[in-house]
Length: 625
Ligand SMILES: O=C(O)c1ccc(O)c(O)c1
Ligand SMILES: [Mg+2]
Image (cartoon, rainbow, N blue to C red):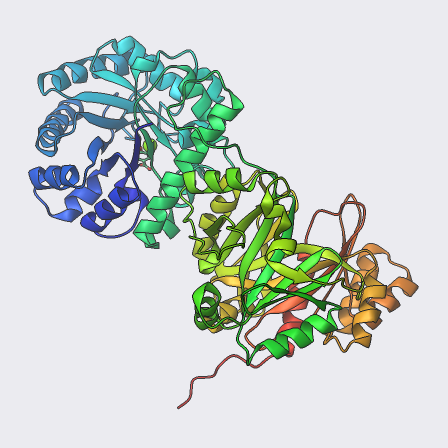
């Protein structure tokens, strides 16, 4: 697989882009003309810099408003093209993208345009270059790849071919199956982009909202299956116009791009195994069986507060690590580790974030396969320095530098509690059964990146993104689920939001809350109250509204109110939740009960929960005189 990315897709100066693209492992770049002009490097120098970075210029683009013009505009367009062909020779690339015309004077007619391209092909041949025609989905006369192909077919010139761009095909709702009948060698280039399903003007959508394949809602792998079926084996090139990426960290965006291409082509070969896909083999995505444990990194000074909270939640100390200062707290199927090591990974996590969830361990069908897949998808492995007689647990780095470990029941990794710990039986506590989900808070512009991380590594699905109104601004929430792993990614733009303050207080992205499951919310609430659990107080207005909204009985609402329990329901079942008061630093716990397979997370309640949390915490800092 030959990978490429357009310079428009990432931020920075030309050299910063080049460095980031090379570091992310791409084979080539598309030079967007504007980036070249703005760079102020001589074309020969740009060509040399690209080659010295180990890359190739796969495409020069765009050449606009060429076809269908009447004279004298037509002659001007040819003169302009000739100048660009010379430039391409200086750059050292042989392919230019002509995007379909939006010129007000451009005339329609497939044959007229085919004649224009036949003549342009002749001019291109003389300069040793090739021309690819792309249908912009908002083009004046040509806005569908089937029409662009008809122009190219009729032009019938070896130096004129078709360029496909998944955005223009899928964004307009054109069936990609129509690509399958195009001869692969007539497709000169393929550009890939995804986009979120937000109905809006096509041009605006394309120029601001494109994202990496897998980050949006378009069927990019379906598009690529059709492309692969033609036998096309040229570059797969990301062309992502995105406001966030233009401001993002070049290396991260480039790495996400590379990950998205690997994930897309892996999906292609799994969805249609007969297709030729040039990608080294790696394991299929697995569904997570369950969260086996979470681990808090803390200090000896801070551990007592955390342990008091765990006790109030109904956990009891049920074991300790054989060699590290780590205790196991257990209740039902929920395992929580408290690590007070001042050295190593936990020590540095604590230094970086304060008391924080530094590790999440996932029970997988096959831990080694999960790890191999993750690293094939560019996850950073975390080396394990285990002692004699202890397990070596495969691990990768996740959100905010935290660690994700992989366990399985079929190898020794399933014996972690017997091998690495000495344990004793834990009483039933307050009736918690396990860890339902983990909420990770991050800057808004990291959300796409981490959702791609989870959805590409695991067999996972995304729920639609929801907006949560915090009194100080919007917080975006994206849930991702893979079997027994549920994660909500909460992205804060505004610093005054609860999520925004948490990022500042905990020095970067991390787990802001952990939701624990019960089968009997009221019994659990009573048992926790008896243990001194600091519950988050919910106001009376909420109960008045929720009773009216769902038609709940007065008795149920009274019980909810007394226990500060919030309510939601979906087409499957009912949902109950309550929260702990927010801890210093902003972390909190949630207790939930899902009935009959309720799928959500109580998102409609989030604004009321956040307002209640803010009433209970310090006000936003006021600048001093
Ligand atoms: O937005 C544009 O004009 C534009 C230009 C070149 C492309 O390849 C494209 O897909 C879009
Ligand atoms: Mg394009």
